[in-house]
Length: 309
Image (cartoon, rainbow, N blue to C red; front, side, top):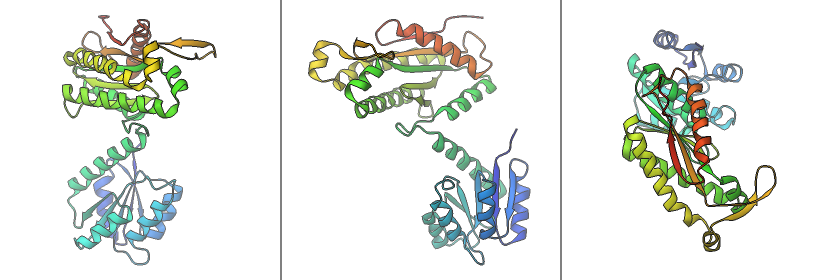
């Protein structure tokens, strides 16, 4: 397993040694004795996170942070600022320069490791998040599913996507299409969180495809509410004329002109309640079959995989 890389910058060799001892079991640690040296290392060996002293001779931690955050290719790297004074002005100065967190020396090793894990997890989700809905994207979705499989705990996954969305997008334009995607995201977040709790997972695969995870016993109720509320909301996104006609015209993926009914949502439910799930690809394969079947009904619906081992 490849370790995440952490760059530590401090002019005190004793602090660098303590950081190395604290972090080397879980991370690849690279050291720099000055901010200038740190900048050279960042450009050649991009770290996943940087721990930087605030007060150093020459370039300060604040100045280092300001330079790094101006670089479009490096500004995403999270920085934890170390300060030996514990003064509020040092902490505020570092945060204003773009630091993601700070910790006061001398630090408690377990507290530092906990903060590093939190920041790395948050950074991965932020970089992976869908820019339209800000929901976790593919990388986080895969990690979430793999974690459930590894823990061997009961779960159900709902794979949802929209039917006839291409024609709607072409007919009304991308702005209206994006509005539909955001509406679906809000709907999923509200219903799934209400039913499965605030820590329930909702992800955005991309386009009009979404994933949500909940307890198997709750999943059908969740899907029923999603289908019902979706069908109630979608008519408001059409003009009165199109709504009265019950269809819009557009082109299919082959360029043929077609009449398309109102948008609908299809959901495939994959669960390990009735069969053993051993890898993420298995979930995706089953979900693809279910969604294809669900789309044949021409109306919003959900279907569950009922195969048993």
